[in-house]
Amino acid sequence: MTIWIPTLEDDTPRYRAIADAIASDVAEGRLQPGDRLPTHRELAHALGVTVGTVSRGYAEAERRGLTTGEVGRGTYVRGATSLDPWPEQPTESEIVDLTLSLPVSIPEEATALAETLRQIAGDARIGELLAYHPESADCRQRAAAAKWLGRLGLNTGADDILVTAGSQHGLTVALSTLFAPGQVVLTGELTYPSIKSQARTHGVRLRGVALDDQGICPDAVERACRMEPKPAGLYLVPTLQNPTSGILSEARRRALGRIAEKHDLWIVEDDVHAFLLPDLPAPIATYAPERTLYLSSVAKCLAPGLRTGFIVAPPALRARLLTGIHTTMWMPPPLMVEVTTRWFVDGTADRLIAAKRAETERRQQLAQQILARHAHRCHPLGYQIWLELPEPWHTDEFVTQARKRSVIVIGAGAFSVSRRHVPHAVRLSIGVPSRPALERGLKVLDDILRAQAPPLY
Image (cartoon, rainbow, N blue to C red; front, side, top):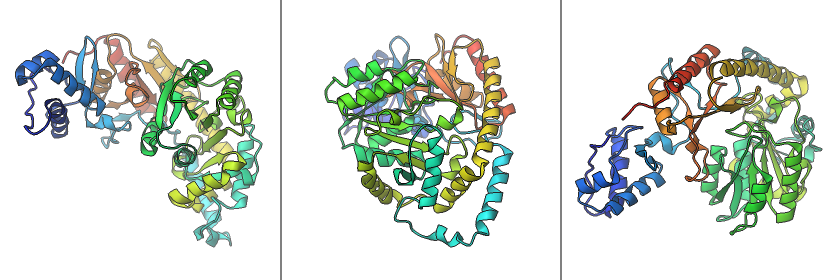
């Protein structure tokens, strides 16, 4: 698109007025995601301003998340939805939503929940679930969680466990407890989108470091620790890294523990995917227990609606973390924690995880058949696929074309810590759609890529 000529407000600096006009026209629908804006020179001539003014205006629009630009290709509208990494959920039945990395839903989980609720309803202690707890959960519930996490190699007891309303809540508590506004936290150059939004909320500055097929590179962390300002922490997902699905080896986990000790870093180990895999190296928290906050939850392995998570932390931090839990929501909902506890104890959790693994593996096999000719990264038991786009595809162009054909995916920009490192790739999450819908959506993406070239705007 090269005919867009904005109307600029008179009382605003010209460059800012250009960015404001883009925002207004996106909101009003006059500009659509994927629209190509005029070149800097074309718009400068039309508005009677300098090319430098247009360049500043486009840069301001990109800073706000309204546009994306690439040398030699032009400037394109990202649209208002790109400000939020999670697109608005569609309601049309024909749309295939591949945006949310959630576990597959199986009939057994609803049956199990109904049975557990009947058991709780008949328990003489049911009234205790309506009371406040001075702790994050009662001792029996925390002991069950400790035993459950012990299967991953964590040597914990009830007094070592703090219960949260999921790992998102745990991450909020961790950031507010460990880091002051302005401090730097390292993370992968591609990372979980929520750490980006939470860092902004807490005033924490993120610095991206290099990743490879395993995940975060210890050498890159070591180099970043020598930069100014000196980092205070490291956030990572060691198992099925989001979005690339890498898994850190035992050697890397040990190395990261040593780096944390050497450079006085706090590690926030977000290990929510660990129970998806039957065999894993021990958590980093076992190698650097005094420098690591270990986060887990049941959202990825059981059900996101249970909103039950866990923090394992050094004893010296426990009181501060508990204060953080109390400050944000006092305690996680006792009924949800009780359902989770009973599923841990009676074997329901193991049965559901086994069933979800089997269905996930079938879906990944389906995806490998359809996407075999395209470069991508995944794990047989993971919920996500990192699909790398070939030349000349641009991420936003691909996302737009997929949406036009009723398939919604998330572009690499949602995961990129720096605008300087935004690869041409998208993340596909395979857990939410039905299997027939997933097959239909993947075939659409394959068809788009086999066309080899994006449409001209």
